Amino acid sequence: MMGWFWIWPVLVLIGLVLLGYLAYRLTQNRRPGADTAAAAGPTSARQILDERYARGEIDDDEYRKRRDELA
Image (cartoon, rainbow, N blue to C red; front, side, top):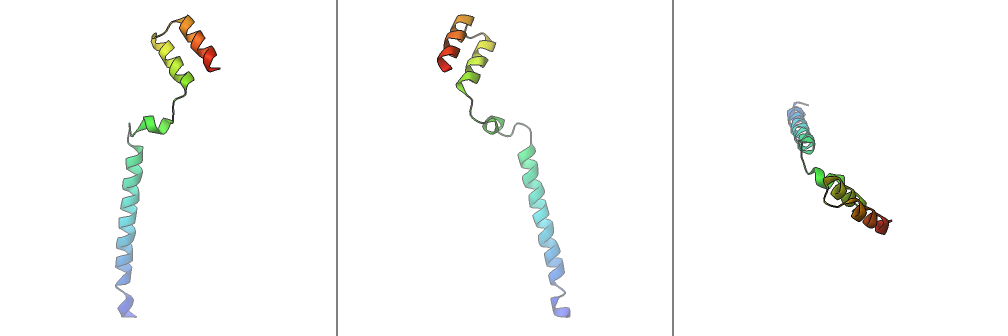
C-alpha cells in the first residue's frame, strides 16, 4: 500500500500544470486587439461601399449607382 503513495503528489502536480496552461490559453484569447479583424469575418462589398460613403470618399450619385449594381 505504501508503494503507491507517491502517485498522489504527481497527479496533483499534473493537475496544477494543466490548470495553469488552461488559464494561460484563456487569457491569450481575451487580450484586447487580438486579431479582431480576422474574428469579424469577411467584409461584404456593401459594407465597404457604405464605409466609403460615410468617409466621404464617394458622393451620393456614385453611392446610389454602385449600390444598385450590387443589388
